[in-house]
Amino acid sequence: MATMRYRLVMFGFSAICEDIEEVRMRLRGIPPARVGYEGIDQCYLIDLREHKQYAIILHNNRFIVDGLDEQE
Image 1: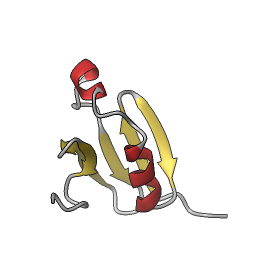
Image 2: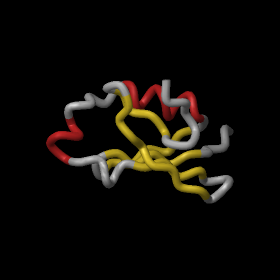
Image 3: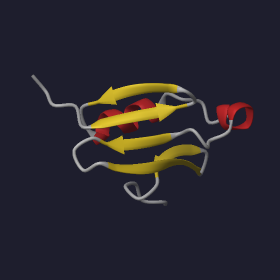
């Protein structure tokens, strides 16, 4: 059984993810326009192993994990 590493919270909904690639896949499926309707203050990622929280930000019209993903 796989160990779940991350808890992704976006716009009031949460998902438990096995790895950072699953997190990125889920972020790609969320329309960036939702930020305009709901705000981004309740979008974050929790590393369940390291007990750290990261903000999800909108960069170049896509969601990224601030502190884990590079801002190109």
